[in-house]
Length: 106
Image 1: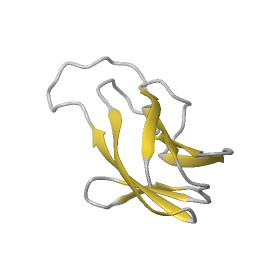
Image 2: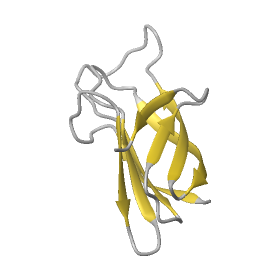
Image 3: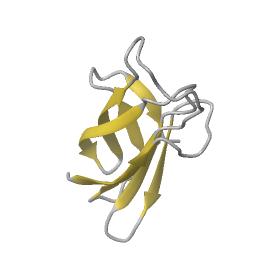
């Protein structure tokens, strides 16, 4: 299973907690990862790999946090990443580098 990053940034939809949404297309499915609202800048999501099958795709990412004591923007941010997967995905699970579940689609 292959994926490509469509978009990522710091100012997605305001959300109190991490979430995953799946949108099916004709040739591929789009998976949106929302980290949720953060109190500062310096946060980002880096998609690393996808695995599984069309019924349940697991998206492994690196979640980057601002360095301790670093100078960051003091503004609410909502980091997100949007990827396209070459499969007709039914559900998605988002995990960090260590395999800890961050969020699952419903």
